[in-house]
Image 1 (cartoon, helix red, strand yellow):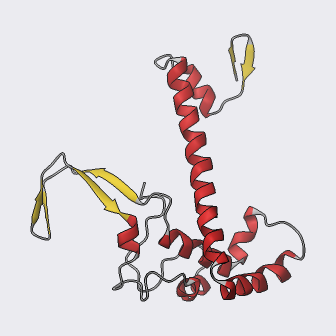
Image 2: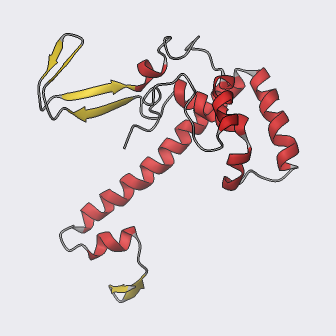
Length: 178
């Protein structure tokens, strides 16, 4: 705890920003607003795409309902439930594969590289297109179809966040990679 403008402030990210005497109040406001917007916006967009895909696939809705109804027994879904709901996880992953919240990910190239015969000089900004990567038919058969079952084999084998057995570790980048 520390005191700011006569009030005790608990230790938190915002408190850390306030304690940092190198940041102006405007800079603190921008940082906090960016974090709030990024967290709310990505969640809302991801959820909207999930609902869109479920609305267009009644057979998937039925299968998801069959998993959720007996497990939840009328109560609301809680964060701790997700490990016990493999088909829901598969639906979320498939939606994130088709419509990632970060469709293009910029990266600065540190060293010059050659990529498929093209020289990309150091210092260039390179955009990885998540949509194109996740729709590669060599990795995902019928890549434009919403097909959550493609994730179920790996989901049954591991309860964490596995990749499909055939998948390259960077085949889907719904939130980028760090």
